[in-house]
Length: 318
Ligand code: UDP
Ligand code: MG
Image (cartoon, rainbow, N blue to C red; front, side, top):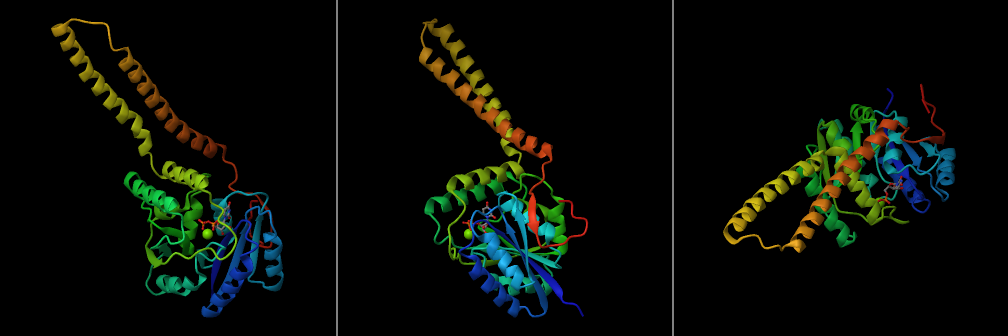
């Protein structure tokens, strides 16, 4: 009987320091899951260090190691997509290279799918230990806002680390959008997900690739990708300003009738003009953001460009 296969997708961007540790952990977890055949697909996201050489070196020694290497840095989301596209396991997992997603949780995740009948097993961290407090604060606010304005459920503290069935993975591949926000995509496709909680683990070696700025842009991507609520802001603000103007008009009329019309009030007029101008620019900005995303989608560019790989695929389009 042939064993069922689990493909692990690992996006790597400048991870030379941590890859040897990761490989060690991979070998360990493979021993814990003897009834499955494991493969690991490293997606080299245009690293500038020796990541690709290290991965190729693993691949030479171990045929369970596969790699896909991009022509430049396309971002983690593109790397995940590429990994999924190349993974042909019966189950597919994705995890970071820095061991913040402990591979040792894999047997527990496999159990959730195989024995408990879930379609995917995902992880969420219950603590944000080791993270700058400002980042944690904004992350919390983001999740709260997101869940209020979007119909797609996005779990607070969810990591991208998850194991899924082939069917779940195939549904994700159906979502071919260019602006990808995995946390939303996983929620959008539905299915039954078991949440496994664990304590935050710090990165084993190397440095995080996410600056505060990059995270902020990523969260905006998430909001725009999975909610159209900001578009309604213009209408709501417009309505509020109209009501205010109407009340103001009545007050001025009454005042003029009762007390005459002394010429005054230019500072307040300036404030009103400035405020209205500000609101208009703000709303136009929101429209612009949606438009720019639509523009990028309309171009239909490929999500990534693969420069080299050791995976042979049937009907590969790139
Ligand atoms: N990563 C990537 N492309 C990028 C940035 C990050 O493939 O442009 C990978 C990185 O190698 C790691 C994972 O995404 O495996 C998560 O990155 P990191 O650990 O820096 O993020 P954090 O855990 O701090 O959120
Ligand atoms: Mg990390």
